[in-house]
Length: 194
Image (cartoon, rainbow, N blue to C red; front, side, top):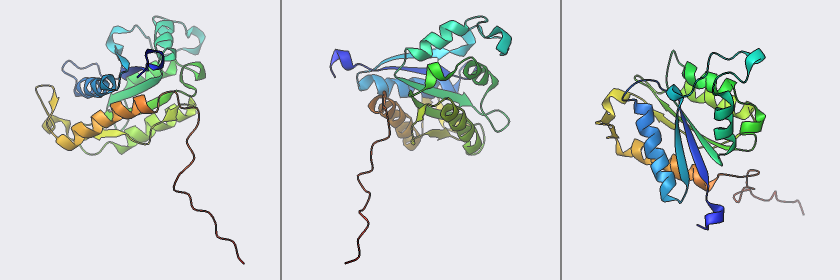
């Protein structure tokens, strides 16, 4: 990869828990992005001062620092544990401080970790928010259910899930900076009547 084409990928970690499985999975995904030549940054939202969003004080705390981190990225991974069927409040607050300037035409990848069953609603909620912010959301997403049994010492033990996590990191680089969806190469011409 030409140095001028180097992509910068960040991940927003929506978990505040020590030993976070969401963090471990995001780190693995960013590691795969680095193998594609990208520079990466894991943004630990526990270290970012963001009070509950108030539109009358949208520059509170580290809001501008966060917005600059997102604006500087070619691709953004959004990672969250599941809370009450959706994504975490810390990630919601971070996204509330962002606008179209941060996300429009930015490639976004989604990763959600659940202690229980398959976290489809949380992924749908994140996809809806990212699309509302006019981001390009990757079709490939990662759902890690039953996380207590799929991690050991900070490593994913499920090979299929580990491959999905790494694929997310690769695809966020491959599709970073996309300006529009490519035309389908599988579309068929409509036959004409003779």
